[in-house]
Structures are given as C-alpha cells and as structure tokens.
Length: 157
Image (tube, rainbow, N blue to C red; front, side):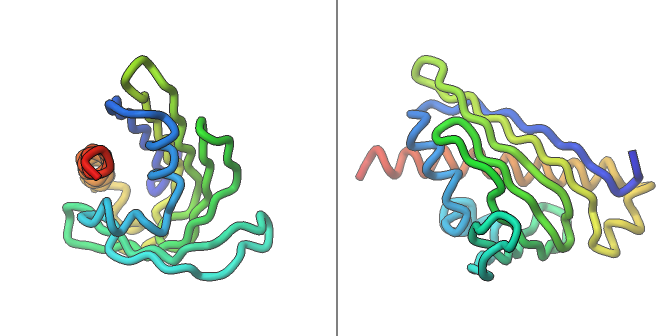
C-alpha cells in the first residue's frame, strides 16, 4: 500500500428504518445540512460522462486544521441496500455505503478506499498517516451523531 493510500472502514449501528437512513445517506447535496461539522459546502457540478450521474463539488473538513476539495458522484445504487461512489480531487478513489435492517436498528457500513492527493496530505502521509486516519474517523463519528439527530428531527416532525 502506498503511503498516501487509505482504506478506512466505518460501522454504525443506528436505530431506525433502512429506507429512511438510505434516503438520508443517498442525498449527497443534503449532507451539508445534516452533517455540517464536516461538509462545509456541496454544489452540483454537472454530469459524470462515465455514469451519467450528478457530480458534486465538495468542501469538507475534519478535526485537523485543513480542508479538502473533492468531487463525488454515485457509480451504483441498489435501494435501500447500497450506494457506491467515486471521488476525485484531494481524495481520489471510491467508497460504498451498505445498509442492513436488523430489528429496530440499521447496520451501516461505509468502506472508503482513497488516495490522498492534496499536496500536504500526500507529502506527509508517510509519517502522519495515523493522524490523517484519525481525522477521518473523527469526521465519521460526527456523521453518526448527525444522522441520529436527523432521524430524531424526522420522527418529531
């Protein structure tokens, strides 16, 4: 594995309905509303020539003091069980969301395979990879908290 290559799996167990959680996680444009600590700005950026799907320009951050500029689009979708995506820019690679109903809970798995191409990250990955990985997991922990808040908001309305 190259120094700037990352595989970062995340597992959440969230109380809720698979269709609702799938709907929330499949609407990339809405991430900045319900996951605001990480997704600072998301805008439509046209159509991907390969997939025909909408492309999004994304500005995101973690706990460490840097921001990431990247693009993403869906590459495959099997409602309500999975969403696959690809990324380019500061993060080049692909990820897959998987959802499985387990009683009153949904097991959510996100597998993220990316190369850090932001010059700062690429340069320092050989020595700071554990910190960059920790930054990703901080961001994903905020995602779980934000998803739970969004589910509560939807139940109350």
